[in-house]
Image 1: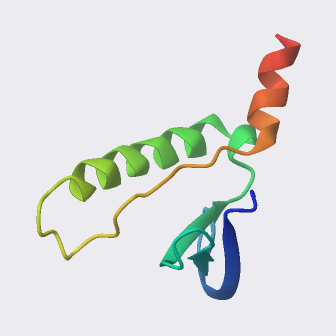
Image 2: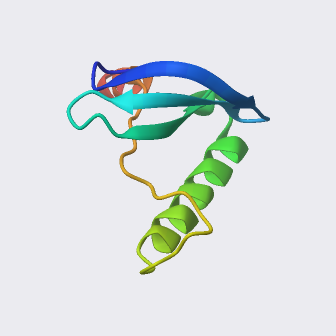
Image 3: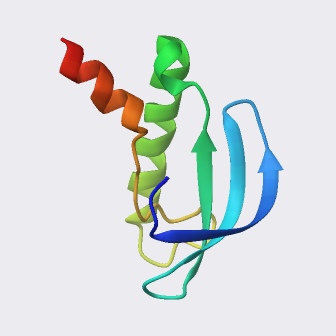
Length: 87
C-alpha cells in the first residue's frame, strides 16, 4: 500500500481479504480499507470485486446515504502494473 494511510487496527477478515481501520495522513480522517488478497490470480474473484466496487461507487453518489460506506479511493496492487508491462 502507499504512504497516504496509517493502519490502526484490523476490523474483520472475509473471503476476499481483510478490512482495516486507518487514518488518512493528509486529512486525519478515519477510514476503512479493504485489503484484497490474490485478486490477480482468479478472474472470477476479480469480476466479483469489480462488481462490488461499481455498486459501492454508485451508492456513494447518493446524497445522504448513511447505509453504505463511501468509496474514497481504489489503490491497485503493483503486480497489476507489472503484469501489463510484460504484455
